[in-house]
Length: 420
Image (tube, rainbow, N blue to C red):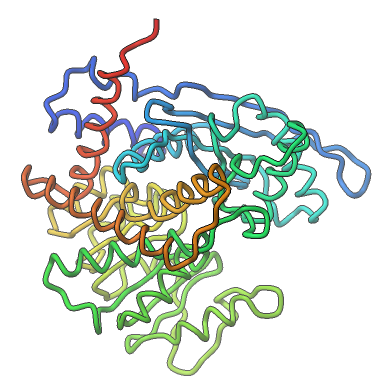
């Protein structure tokens, strides 16, 4: 029986591999094996029926070495502390690889938000915010949307924090509604970043963008936007999926129609999408479908040693955090697959979160064209740095990205030293 997947152990193994390639001494990177802070909170909520339920919540700060901690907040019934620790560490590396002045953090509440009314969800969010209040703030730790949270949830956090402070503090969160200080282009930023990185990868590999067959696991904010933008660039989106399953068409799906279907009637799922010429598939089948590019944009640990041998895509672009296990990486490398890691591929969201934070601090608002132009500049610069590092060291894209990220963190640590 194989050992249960632990995302934090997975992160540590990759960190160790990068440290070896960088010829680092253990003293150089030992501090990055541990989060700076871990907070676990109990969140009492009065439900609509008058009964009280207590939910478990977390906020983990991995590193504040290069700036305030930055990381999303997810609501999921299966989340645990190791997952949150891993996600916080990945945020540190992600911010470092795109070279923005942030550290990494992550928050979570163990809850299925679909089982809560809007009032219950709002009360849960406000109480969670109050419980983690000592850790967060524009100069300390800045939450953002993640799995099962959105701009509305960020608005509740911002309002709660502002009520405690006695004045509006828009910079305490990013990914909030534009009407209260959110940034234009933020909602689409992660998916746009995935498109840009996919485009650059194909260009470097000499694969034409037009006609390239793409399969995308997850049609949420990341996968849905990536599907639309890649379709607009001339790619054939042959398979997409959500929590209910997926659909496949070798000649290309009607992406606009699917996106419209998913948002109609208060939200629908792909298992109910029935169109002639479109075949129903499972999420597992999508991962091994015939395609040129595979974009996992759902949850962690989707590509494992069990299904990696059957993956047919030439390029895998990680739209979600931690979708590929260390064991699967080894298999994919032997099969000559190009895997673009999460800390680069899905960094578009945190880049535009940084832009939003800057706008809040300066009390300015950029137009969407300026946001998208600045995002593209940073993503392409970061891609080129990772590609060159990969090439110079004859290694994988993942190791190239981690070498860039870890080296920046190590240099910052050497400059700042250890207090006291």
